Length: 507
Image (tube, rainbow, N blue to C red; front, side, top):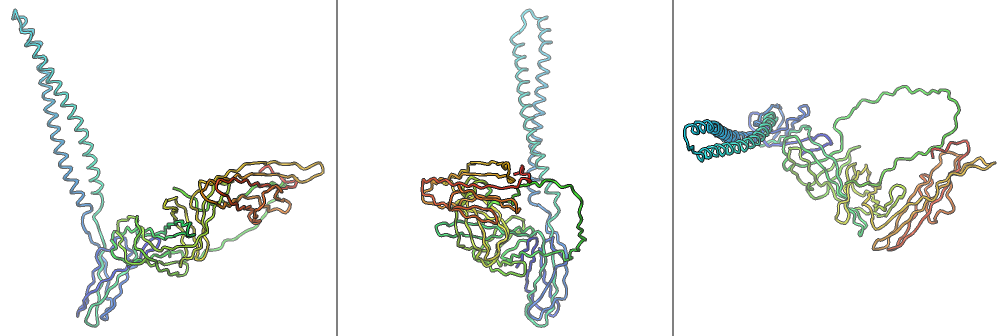
């Protein structure tokens, strides 16, 4: 069995050993090279067994990549033989060219002697000799070009294979640890020996799949664990527990420092009125391996950490490949809304409000979003306690169109006897639905929230009726029902009243 933490794992292996008159040895072979020796612990049960000794030693299993290196050596031998064959062909072509050059060089001298000695020289023989030397040289040149091209390609292949072999040969031999536990029994029978240790190279993080089921007013939420097991020790048929606890923490309390309060004189300046936005986080903004055992995980909360017992037994290779295992699957009631915030994005988003009715908190992690059998994208899920609310976005509702039009953004100076400047704002929201059925669209826009007693924000009388205003955050919300093909318009008007002594140029 294994308990996997975010950055390591507590592994427990067991063996049964027969008891005799002398201490029996339980050999645990193939332990990972990176185990923490200080965490080794052995226990014995049955036949009155007790631990008398524990030793750990290194074992060299085999030379690293032995089979791959042997295969590369065979390919290198064949490649070198082919290179020698092409080099021989090139040498023969070079020799033929030299013979052709020699023949072409001797023909003029022979022709001159025969022309001086014979009244009727054999001109056809001279032409045939020259043509023969030309053909020999051309054939040799063609052979040389082909041989050079083959040698360049073969030498590239040779360098690539040598590089691969060098990389494999540079790895050290495959090594592992081996532990021997000595057990003495007080009666006949068999003792069960368990060896536990901490191993690095193991980690896990939660991943979620959220599937919208609007017809049933549900969200199907599956929690999966993405594990990486790179200890080199394969885990076959392991009983797996996932824990969020951190195995090491700084237990030293912080030391408070002196805190001083002081002041420096400053000239009195005019007050400056500024805008300050709170950080806007998209609801679940979209960006663009198989599950393991089915069933529900048993959950246990231990203080600030949570443990998940993965159902059944699982197999995890030790080669570091990421794997996903199903931890739990839930069908959660959901309230689906169609939301638009025209100032931020002129689209209608399909969102779902879900209550976490699982038996455990939802941990921070990536959530992959699906609707109608299609993958929409992914977002990040924050920590959601049991019973708390979470909101998920399931993409843009394309048939619903939204447009925001600026009507006025105008400053009005105070009159001759006035002392208040008035900033007027007006916007129109044009809504249209091309959906097959009726929809209800939630339209939201913010108005400023004054943090100053002498600065007032007032909604204008031309603002479309039916809105709700959240005074604390300044969010104005309309809920608009649209029939197929229907168009509607909403208007928002507000004013900011500012005393004359404020500088409002930053607004």
